[in-house]
Length: 253
Picture 1 (cartoon, rainbow, N blue to C red):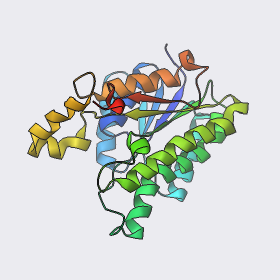
Picture 2: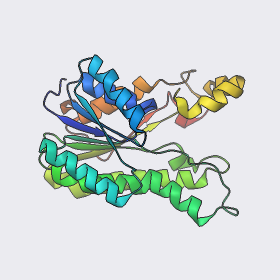
Picture 3: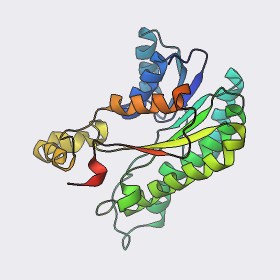
């Protein structure tokens, strides 16, 4: 379903899943605002999208900064008069640390990247989402939010469990305004996130498919298609849900 005239803001959108989402939304007719922290890369991505006839712009800011998020989301909302879709894509592992050795700085940095960022961006966008059409927020959680993550990824799992909870809490909070809030939970997706292990230990990367029911690694575009659906009018009666996009990986085999 085409979404001409709609405005989407995608955080962490200069690569990987975020860029695939921005491109898919642009092809659906959205004006897309890409966020990131690399100005040069952001400009390149906008050129790529414009070459495909997509209306896009790049707005650089750090999603872990309360002030930067509030200032820039507000500017975006005021420029377009509304926001129809906020995709809180920015996030990441942030490194690995067992709790015994974990510094408070590391703990807070991972929580800020994955959970605080969702709160900051959502809070700033709400006044403009209220002016949007079938407006919604889409967050990203992870299997780690349920299984607490692998060795050293415990705080990552903790932050993603928080995203699962804040998604449902926001859905409750915003239902009276007709604003929907959902989340996606990508499994193992072939992105730069896994570039190092793919390059140095390709056999390990290839073996990950053995734990996926469909027997293969996912593609960024497969996440983007679900995000586009959740933001569309076709999903107008879906809120407070989390959709697993992992080829059955969450079941474990």
